[in-house]
Image 1 (cartoon, rainbow, N blue to C red):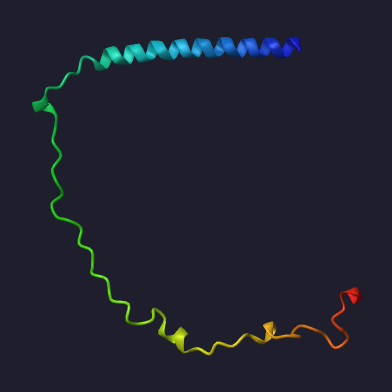
Image 2: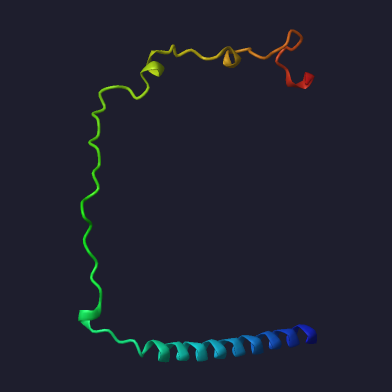
Length: 97
């Protein structure tokens, strides 16, 4: 128990030192950036885009997207038919697995 308490105390001390170091670096950065003051005339303005993006018009949905699929017969495959997959010796009882 004492070992874990000492480890936690060491982690807290390291975190406090790191936080103080970061605060000092932030203050230093603020001081460096404060030298750069821009007036409104010095701020660059962004140019509007030259032309808008041209989107092709949508086709009306008069045709099916896959015309060949619409003409295919709608029958179930033989593997899904009732009784499919049974062998000659099975009677449908799961006990004879």
